[in-house]
Length: 130
Image (cartoon, rainbow, N blue to C red):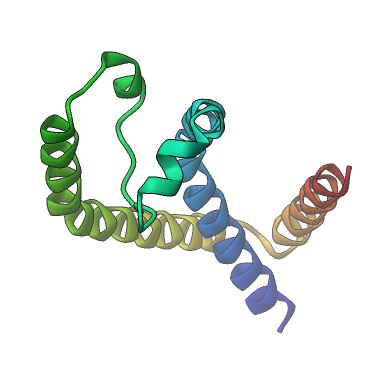
């Protein structure tokens, strides 16, 4: 019973880590692009709908025309479903790999790993609260 819970916890934690790694590259770029957007509040009010697609990193500094922006948005939209599918495949493969690796461990090693992962999770939640 404990073995199954530890294995499930390991799979969930590895999935969370993979998703965090996949999205961490986007966070700094979003913060950088938010500052100029606030400065040009009049321009953002003129735009009726907020875009879900963003320009790639540093493209906002290139003085793109509206036509160029629209073409880039279209390209990104076309590839988004393929990229999302690949990210899901990557997460599934990582979860499968982690599960197989956990099967190699002895019961005592699994319990130690569970404690280590629990400590790491506590530290992460403590950092999020601060």
